[in-house]
Length: 300
Ligand code: MG
Image (cartoon, rainbow, N blue to C red; front, side):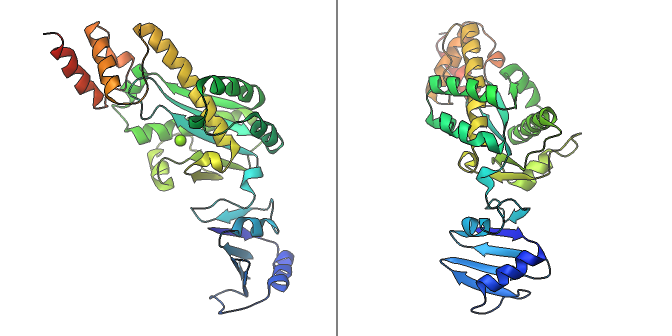
């Protein structure tokens, strides 16, 4: 765990006095100290101070609760959880039936407590009724945008893009929509629930008219780093649920989530009823072939 903060020259001098020196001085540093499991190193040229160790974030926050902070790819700036953050997450990637849904939600710092108190957390740990209830409250309280690709659209796009690329495009679009909604307010940070390395994500966006890049952070299990990502996961799942219901209605049977054998059986049933799988399912999954075989078997 590592956190780097940039401070004013005055603060830098104060920090140098406060921490003092011990051990071997790293190159370019003017102070270096180990304190309660955190190693603190000050670099006078850039006025950057690096904190390393388990408690690096909280130690750094003593000096820079709000200032422009930087951190290594594995970490986030000090105090990030209490920042005004635009978060995004997606649902439906691994499910054969149903849409790919991405949501972006802006949670201003003064709303963080309320959203957290509602019980917003990773949507995977919540029941469907809880998701629906929470999503409505989030959408009332916070600016958001949903990008939903129903199977028909998804199947069309997946001919041109791979799935990760498609996800990147949807995240970027959802983020840009919320930024427009909240302008001239700007979030202190943007947090994407990470599904690929940052450089791959930006490569996937090459050629796009608008690429949201400024203050963008990535984090696996982003919902644990800021409630905005948890809120986005709740809103995305809510919308996905409503689309699954509508598609189930249209199909005349309940469409299961996931990509297991039950899914093959249901898809075979749709085929035997003469329905077009492209309207209900992500055709590039291996389930399409299995379902087609099953449907043929049962014809005889
Ligand atoms: Mg995710």
